[in-house]
Length: 189
Image 1 (cartoon, rainbow, N blue to C red):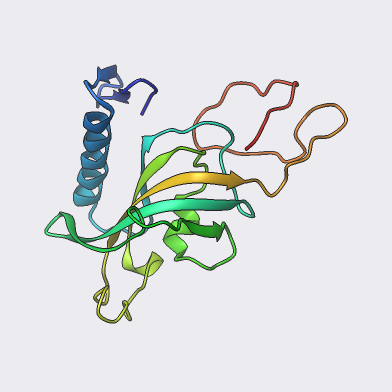
Image 2: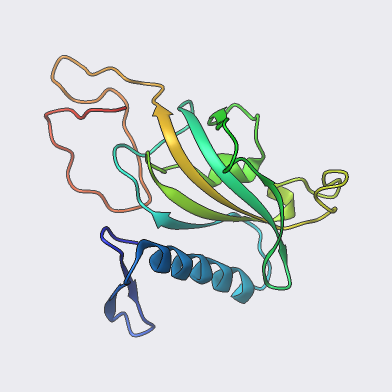
């Protein structure tokens, strides 16, 4: 996923392609389908599948950071998005969580790492990383694979201080290649 409704990908010949979509919605919908296709083509889902829908801006989040999140959760049924079992999108309250505190399912802790403020991501979470064999009575059947669309609305970084040289004290690793860090520090929300 790239800014301005672009997506880039490599084909099986390692040829690089770019697609520009007519709208943000079209780009987001396409990215969701890519993630669902990845899930359907894997023999057994044993880890969290993540697909960025919108990148967001600022610094990627890591363990210890506090987030406020809007989300919708679906059951993964018939090889796609099934019934919605939880959402706070049309509610007044955002979900507040501290990454790494163990207050949300393991798949969220894993799948949200590296997200940025304003970013949206699709997570497909196997049962072992969600509610497992017990499920959630009346909402999530036992051994359910779950799909969440999460959007980071606010971020409070655990380490919001800079050293005297202007460099950030915390070192961050991102799955995406990033430019060489500048020495002028960076602002955070």
